Length: 339
Image (cartoon, rainbow, N blue to C red):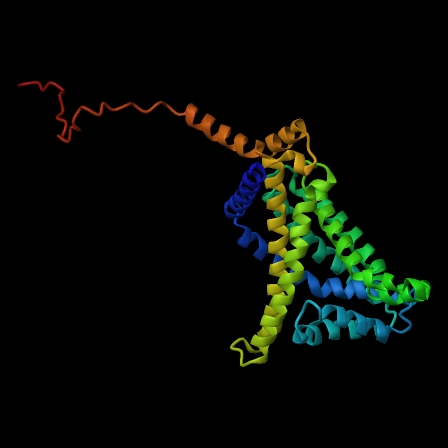
């Protein structure tokens, strides 16, 4: 009974947080800037991968390109893959081009860090800690997180795509079942990465595994929602569409919106768990009080500021409710001098 009450309170706090902070609008903001960041991101990332792809069992760049397109097809529609992803990869992986590394990498850093800054800022808002970082600190922090993610992705992307073949090559026949664990391991690692994002995004951090509930929720929505969205968009785009040539970018934008919505609701869930049941988030009562007090500090500070401004104004006279309002015109009572 107690567990059910706690669960209902967590769900209610999550819904309330999403409504208070307008989760739909914040998700649209992430999707918009994420859409703008995708082309330079692929440009710079694929340029780096082009230099290191031969270090992995992917023997040719054509094979690597096919692996990337096949992986993208698990989440995106065929039109989005063929019209957006494939041309960019073909251009970048056509040769080891230093202009891709220099110009494209700089553009990817700027555009991607802007999208990362929006993501970190919106996650902070969903935790109720908006304004704890200054704008400069927020921008520099997002830039550092994005650089680490980009470099890590350049190394891990070929490994992730070629992973099943690596497992088959290095394991004996008696351990071929390890290949079946590859994608579950990828899901677990991705969940840990999302939890790490929650952990480092907030200015006042709790314990790392306190972000696990939101990360698990995000992964479930991401996987299930992507499959549903892919099928729905494939049916809609396959038929006569009023959007015409805009159907592909709209499909990609909706996919980004789905991911953003899942991440933000997961952040609200983590905040609700920490508020309702700190022990589930791995927090002591003292740590929970510190986080919750700091999270509400900005709001309380603004309320205090408004209150001080009101106190500095002269007090307004209190009218007697029993006294009727005098609507007569006042006459000038200055004595007149009679000549």
